[in-house]
Length: 209
Image (cartoon, rainbow, N blue to C red; front, side, top):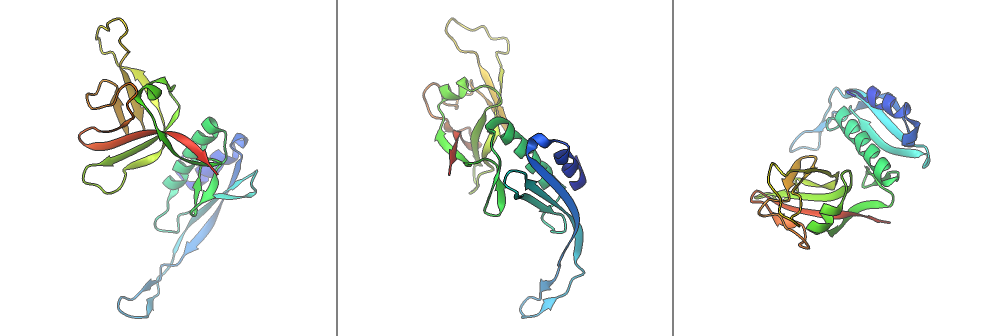
């Protein structure tokens, strides 16, 4: 998928998603204020396409992307659809609106209690985990969302002693780490730690009304 028309076709070709989509021409004003005055500068305007996604069950729009707006593009629609598919598949929910944007999950998906290393090890691949990552020196979180977990064994030829747990690589979109990392918590320790470059915490995904 590369365009809004591609996104609309993918939606309309898959009834299991529970949504329909339309694309229409759009226009946005590019008028701007003249600094230091009460006057406005008239622009030529900007044309584009507007995608409107409607929930079949809720009978109202759940996503709108308008490329006439300089801050919106087809990538926003593609990422939204990918997220919708993940949440519908794993949580069997439909998105609702929140703060002007679509919030996948009904009830609202939010960060739950911080997991322990033992609890993370017990989760199967494909589970969603609330991942928060903040780089040193930054005031904001680079990652703060529910993301799918991928787990792989990473024995790397080591001979395990009796009772020793298999080392595991935990990967999320944008970050990964091993259970053998010296700074990563183990056992019943909660997964909120500093790896030398980032402050990381992993939590359960919870639902609230």
